[in-house]
Length: 76
Image (cartoon, rainbow, N blue to C red; front, top):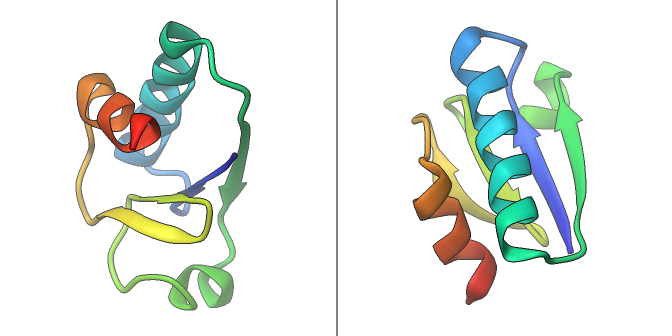
């Protein structure tokens, strides 16, 4: 599983990464977490950050997802 955190490095983007890492740890799943900070690359997926992409599917756009929300996306 590949999880991408899309954002330029703002506080919410960093929190989304922390929440994703915590969700992965709590579930015990195998996942690679990749930070995407290049605006051109981000625009290939979304218009607003922070955003979360799981296996190339946008799950969250323009908001900070909680650990519980992320766990729900990872279990589907």
